[in-house]
Image (cartoon, rainbow, N blue to C red):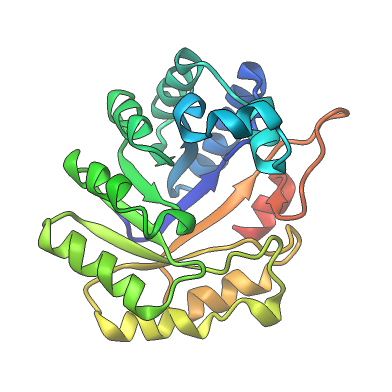
Length: 247
């Protein structure tokens, strides 16, 4: 399930557009099949009416709230994305940010649930994720070793298959800040757990992933996007040509 898994993270790079989202899925699934990868497309689910407070929804002063609203999609479109991912022989990974989104992910046939670094201490969400008994990957950006161990112990006790992703929550991440040696530390603590690397480095950086592989990472995740005349790449998402070089 986890070993040598490559995750193409769409996040909000569909820009709230059904057609563009399907284009990303088809293009990156094709790339995964071309390289004969164990690959996945990852989506992010947020139920905005309950995830964001009514006050923040009204004010719209937080840049993240504005972005989430501007790229929101109806449930049916997300369901279409999920079907397209499966049709293109990719695994479906979903990061839910609230409990209702866990139910939606389960309804849409999620293969692996990803817990974002920012949700590492959201125990109502984590309990809900455990309740659907799906394999889990959790990221470690900004967490100390005790917080990582809490998740390790929780999923071990629940007998849920899980993997751990080393991650630095800087967008983009400079090579000097990538802390790749932490992958070795995680691997040495339990050699039976698959350790991965979720990268946010510059799209043209192919060195960091090589060092991560050398340190023992077995899952690799990057944000991906297809630019157009109206849609621009952010500083940490790769286009198709950059992804090909990275692979």
